Amino acid sequence: MPGFQRIQYNRYGGPEVMRVEDFELPAPGNGEVAVRVKFAAINPIDWKLRDGQMKIVTGRAFPRAMGMDFSGIVTAVGNGVTRLKVGDAVFGLARFKDSGALGHALVTKEAFLAKKPDSVSFEEAACLGTPGVTAWNGLIDKAKLQANQHVFINGCAGAVGEAAVQIARLFGAVVSGSCSARDMERARSLGVQTVHDYRTMDLSTIATRFDVVFDTAATMTMSAGTAMLRRGGVYLDLNPSPGKFIRAIVDRRLKPVIGSPRADILEKLAAAAGERKFRIPIGEIVALNAAIQLITELEEGHKLGGKGLVAME
Ligand SMILES: NC(=O)c1ccc[n+]([C@@H]2O[C@H](COP(=O)([O-])OP(=O)(O)OC[C@H]3O[C@@H](n4cnc5c(N)ncnc54)[C@H](OP(=O)(O)O)[C@@H]3O)[C@@H](O)[C@H]2O)c1
Image (cartoon, rainbow, N blue to C red; front, side):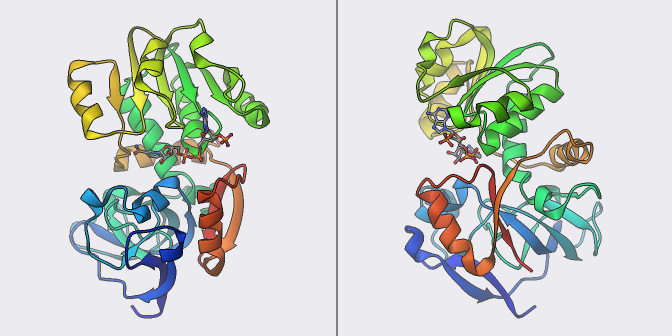
């Protein structure tokens, strides 16, 4: 299918390597689905991959596309695809290695997609993938969260943080957390019972001990996180490294989290979003020709108060 454009780069590097360029969409293979993208959401992982921080996984083949999260319409399905058909409205994630959500179309795994509920807009649906899946992987898959457990979410007003707050509340947990003063009201409105301002408060002075500490801001040290746990508690680390995985074998409190999409998670997130119990706020929407500028600004620390989205039509 000719005539498609996407953001891609021909070497690892900073914002200067991003280009909007033409590309050809391959036909979907076994278990794969082609999607015409309507909206893509920007995540920190997009520039971390482009910087080459994970080149051990992403390899040396260029050009490399960008973008993980999107919503759109299924345009073709490969052999073995059973849950989706051409014309379905969907949302989900690109494959980590291939990326490609920041473009007019992509091919991804059927298991990385769910149908978009009618009551959820394409804009809202595009925001859900990486934050929702990562929060679910941490709280439900790794920490096995139970009702009435007490969770501390470091960075509770960020995208993964807000997703974690809402998922923890859906499972009946009590939530405390940290964010900046500007975001405290938003955090409280999501159900964070006790909110601390991370800029003025030293987490080590919090006397409460938690069943789960989830560092969704990826700013805590392992020792600070585990010090906040009750006996039997779990520290969820979003900044995993090979060393941390080795340490986690002997220290059962430590659980490094790598976002790992699955159909069952995406379908549960879709259901919660459809019932208006799960959403990630939108900060700004730009066209594809302004997306490199927005990614660059976000990377430099500019705050939108919600997700940066790119409209593809
Ligand atoms: N391992 C994985 O698979 C995985 C998956 C998804 C994300 N991540 C990582 O998780 C991190 C968060 O991602 P995101 O999409 O949620 O980003 P985001 O939307 O930018 O949110 C980050 C939040 O952290 C807050 N924050 C910054 N410094 C803090 C501190 N010292 N204490 C408490 N909160 C602090 C920020 O607050 P301010 O606005 O006040 O700065 C912001 O609300 C990124 O590093 C991302 O790469 C990892």
